[in-house]
Amino acid sequence: MGILDSLQPQKVFYYFEELSKLPHGSGNTGAVTEYLKAFASSHSLRCHSDEAGNVVIFADGTEGYESSPAVILQGHMDMVCVKWAESQHDFTKDPLALAAEGDEIYARDTSLGGDDGIAVAYMLAILDDPSAVHPPLDCVFTTDEETGLIGAGALDTSVLRGNRMINLDSEAEGVFTCGCAGGVRVSTILPISRDRIKGLPVVVSMDGLLGGHSASMIATGRASANKLMGRYLHALQDTVPFSLEHISGGEKDNAIAASAKAHLVIDEDDYASLDRFTRSFEAEIRSEYAGIEPSFSVTTVKGDIHRISVIDPASLDKLIFVLLMTPYGVRELDGLVKGAVKTSSNPGIVRTTETEFICANLVRSSEESGKAALRQEIEALGAHVGGKTRLSGNYPGWPMKKTSPLRDKMQQVYLDLYGKEPVLETVHGGIECGLFSGKIAGFDAVSIGPDMKDIHSYNERLSVSSSARVYEYLLKLLAELK
Image (tube, rainbow, N blue to C red; front, side, top):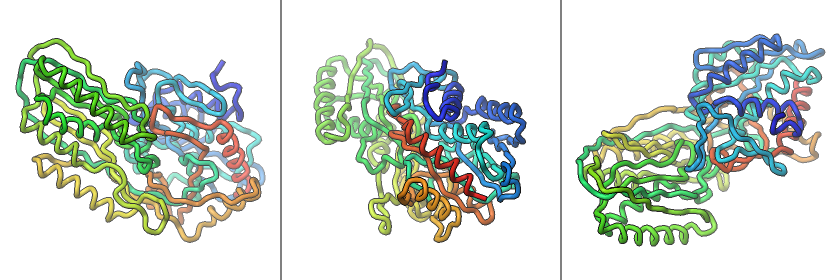
C-alpha cells in the first residue's frame, strides 16, 4: 500500500509517489525517462525521446476535439536534492521517504521534489484518465531544468504540434506566471598551493539555516552558510592562528547554502580560544538574524594531532577574500514592479580540492544588462586574486507579453470556476518558457502550479488540497481550449 493512496485525486498522487521511488536528481533522470517511455508504450501513445533524456508523449484530442489546435503541457522531471547534514539518504538510489501530515506532503530529512514532480504527476494522470476531455496534447517532460534548463535547450521543438503552452512549474495556486528572469552560473576557480604541517584538526560546522530556493527566497533575508563561513574565518584570523585543510558548503547553486564546514588545523593550546570565539560568533549571528534564522548553530569537533596537508597562507588569504567579497542576495529591485527582485546572486556551493578552491554562483536578472554587469563583477573579483571564471547554464528571460489569447482564456476559466481573478506576475526564478519562446513561432504560454513551501530545501512541503484544486482547474481549462 502506498503512502499517498488515501489522497485525492488518486491518480495524481499515485504517479507522484511512483516518481518518488525513482532517482531523479538533476543529471540522474535516466530511470524517469525509461519509466515515461514505458508508460507511453503501455498506454499505446506515441512517444519521442532524445539524447538529453527529454520525453514527449502525444495524445490525440478526445471526441469533439480531434481537430482542435494542440496544447503543450510541460514540466521537468529533475529535482533539487538537498538533505539534512546528518541524513544518510543516497539520492542516487534511495526512494524518497514520503510522509503526509494534515494538508501537506513532505519527504523525511530531504527535499521533496514537488518542484517539479507534481507536473509529471499531473500529465500522467491526465493521459491515464479516459474521462478527461482535451484537445490534442503534447506532454513535454524535460531533464536538468534545475542546472540550467539544459533539457529544454536541447529539445528539438519541431516535433511539437502546438504553440500554446501550459507550463506546470509554478508554486502558488491562483498566481499565473507570465514572465521570468534569466540566469547564468558563474564559478570562480582559484588555484591553491599546499603545505604539510603537524597540528590539531578541528571541524567547524555551521548548520540549522533555513536555506531555500535562491529565487523565491532570496529577498527574505535568510543567511547563506557560505557567506557566514567566510566572515567567521576572516574574523578568526585576528584571534587564533589557524590553517585550513578543506572547506565545503551548500549543495546546489540554485539553493541558498544551509550548512558549511571548515576543516581547520590549530595548535592544541589554542583550542579553548577557538571554542570561545565560536560561541561568541554564534551568539552574534543569532542576534543579527533573530526572527529569521532561529536554529543557527556553530559546532567544533577536534580530532587527534597528526601531519596534515593544508592550504598555504597566501592561497588561504585569497580564498577568504573571495568568500567575503562574492556578492550574495538582492542587488537590484525592479523599479516598475513594486517589491519584485530584478537582479541577485547566490554563492550556492563552495568546495576545495587538492589544487583548487571553487565558488559556484547563480546570477539572475530580468534584464540582460543587469545579469552581465553582476557576472562581470564576479569575474573581476576572481581575476584580482589570480583565479579564473567558468560560465555555464546561461538562459534567457521570458518577458510578459502585452497580449496573450491563452492567458485571457485561462483568466476567464479561473474566474468562472472560483469567482475571482487570478494574480498575474513575473518571477525572479528561471522558467523553461524562456527557452521555448525563442524556438516556437507564435509561442503563447502561462505557468501555473499548486501551493508549495520552501522548495529546494529539506523543509519543502506540497499542499494536498491545492494540488487537487489546480488539477481540477487544469481539467476544466483543457475542456475549454478548443
